[in-house]
Amino acid sequence: MQTMDVDMKVKLIHGFSNKTRIQILECIKDKEKTVSQIIEEIKGNQSNISQHLACLKGCGIIVGRNEGKYIYYSLRNQHIRDLLTMFDVVLEDVENDVACCENHIV
Image 1 (cartoon, one colour):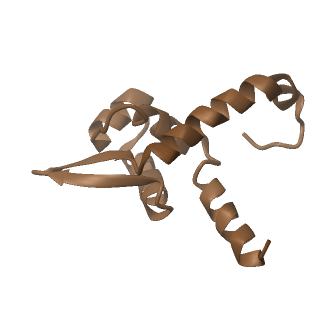
Image 2 (cartoon, rainbow, N blue to C red):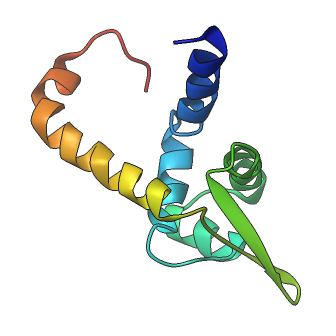
């Protein structure tokens, strides 16, 4: 595997490596939502949520659709939705090990 491929994977995975970003992704997993709806659902603040939305959009994980004065955010495609589901499936298998892991940052 080429170094560039690994670097690109690290960049993509970084998009999923933050609690707030995961909350946003789960929030819009099944239905597109505005920033206000996301803020209300995950109990965040506008500045923080906007920064994370920019990160997710910049990584190509989500897309925004303008409608009037609102931007509706959604997952980029079914592959991203499948990946979020796969995280849940894998976590079921390794949950006890993850819970005991001392080498992680929350």
